[in-house]
Structure formats: C-alpha cells, structure tokens
Image (cartoon, rainbow, N blue to C red; front, top):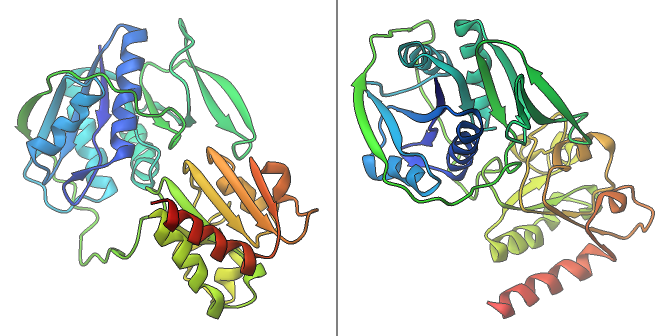
Length: 317
C-alpha cells in the first residue's frame, strides 16, 4: 500500500511545513511497511520538489496542467491520484491549506480524518497515533479503524528529520476538472514574515498603550527576522490589522520562539500559542497568567526592556 503526502508549495516554493509533512510520512511508512509517495500539483520546479529528498522521500508524482489551485480542486486531484495508487493514508501539513483540503479529500474518499497529529504510529494493529487535544493542553492516543485515513499533522509538532536520498519525479496529468469554485482574483500579503510559517514571532498587547508605540515591536522583530503578531483586543480596537491576531479565535501558531509583550495571557490567547517551543513573557504585572505558561519571564516595563533587548540582539550580530 502507499502513503501519499501532499507537497504544498507557495508560488512554486516548497516550504518547511511541506518538508515536515514529508519527514513524518517517511517515518510513518517505515513503521507501517508502506511506500511513501509525494504529490506536487501545479507550477513548481523539479529542483524545488527535490528538496523533499533531504528528508528521505524518494518518489514524487508531479501533476501538471493546473495554474490556480483552490482547496476543492486539490482535493479532487489528490483523490484521483490516491485511488490510482491504492493509497490507504494521505498526509497533509498542518497549514491552513492542509486543514482546508484534508477534510474535503476525506469526504471524496469516504475516509476518516484526524488533525493535530504529533506522533508516528505507536501500534500498527490497529494504527494508533498521538494527537494534541484541548487546545494543545493535552495529548490523546487515537486508533484509526477506517480502511483509509487522512492525517493532518501539527505544525512544528513532529519536526524535520534529515535523511538525504535521491528523489525521482514522475510527471503526469489529471483528468479531474472540478471547477465548482472559480478563481477571480488573488491578493497575497507579501510584507514581512508570514505568521503561519514563522519560526520566530514577536507579539504585543494592550500593555503598549497605543498604536503609536508599535515601532519598538517592529524593531525587535526586524532584529530577529521574526513575524509580528498581536492579541485580540489590539486588533479589535484597530491598533494592528486582524491578520496579526493570534489565539483561539485568530491564527494558531507553533513557532520555535514566541515573545509576548504586554499581554496578560487570557485562556483564549494561550490556546493559539501554547504549542510554541519556547515562550518568553515581558510584563509589568508579576501575577499575569501568561507567566505560568512561560519558559522565560521578565517582570519589567516594556518601554524599558524591549529597546535594551533589541540593542543587545543587534550588538551580538
């Protein structure tokens, strides 16, 4: 049997989340005794596709002839490929695209779907995997009893494991023509670092007292080459754009480093950032709830601490 991995790319660039999905799929296939095969769709070069060879994926099927790809069309093409290969497992990165496409594919294949997966099978009879639950506060072992399964991994939950092999690319085309959604126009925010892809994030809340004080946050983020984010109240009152809002009702992120400045740490905010590898909290209130979730805490005035932190980082370069 085959394990299919969707090789996600953004404007022809294969990013870390695709490598993480491929890395997970290779380890998954090793445990189940299956063959891991990647699927790349649309305009992406062979050199970019071959990046997955650095994590052990030795074969990728490249489906040509598709320009703009919406989630419905990707699901339809993947269903066609999965049925042709007789695949029993299809794996997605934990990106917005993976979370939107995976359930659509599950419907087409009449399969089960499981998200926020962080571990390869601990058992293969039945297949049992570990996933996050309760907004990342707990872990659950889940048995996959369906004949076919769609697995969406948790971003930064498994990691990228290097294992260099030669990657063979097989070019093919698809007869699928699902045009139920038509592409009229597409606008992408190209400024700064994309939050879902960011490994470093600098975030701030109402403790900054006003939009006019955000310059020091941008300067700290620039020194770290990090993305900027904010709490929900900040985006609600218009200090920052809504696409920077992280939390349970905003964007859920899993960076390697999350710096929270002037954010109290309400449960809704923590639910969206608790998967961060390292959390640093800067707040004047030593009783702020966020300190309980922090790996490192600084009790101090952001207007004093942040400029000094930025200066120290720049001096160390």
